[in-house]
Image (cartoon, rainbow, N blue to C red; front, top):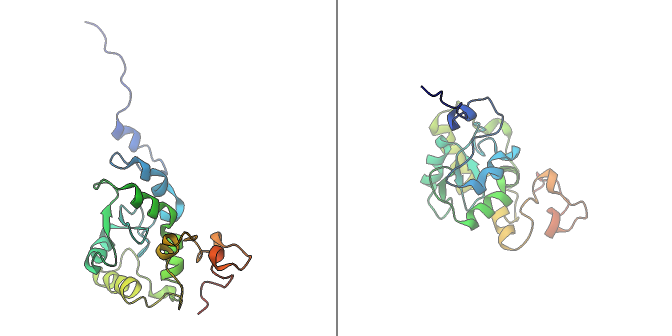
Length: 184
């Protein structure tokens, strides 16, 4: 009897090797760098690890628990797609890759007392109430400032509200006016 040639490890074996990187996305491989970006490795709303849902108009990633609250906001506020189940349009990939959780939270949580932010272990009700305050009522946004999605639509930098993306020149087109993000 002929001996079988050694087989290469299967995809499951490769995935289970404890790699710090999330598994590759077979439906939307162009999202791999977006998912791997450290600022997108936790849910934008409750900090759960490895979010696999997104709001393609807000440009954020979130966990399955928070995805239900986003769906309940309505598509006029948040257009929810699965990172792994839905085939994404190139414009959605562009929005999420250019905004991301850090820039979005820099805006939507600019005036948030961090003790009010839910955690992964909190109830769905608490998460849902927070998400409504954050995106529907806009309780925590800086006053009279455009959102990252609006900045992107205007051809401006959507990262104006996150510390890493600031240009210290003071130009609002590039930096958010040189103000601290918690300024009102």
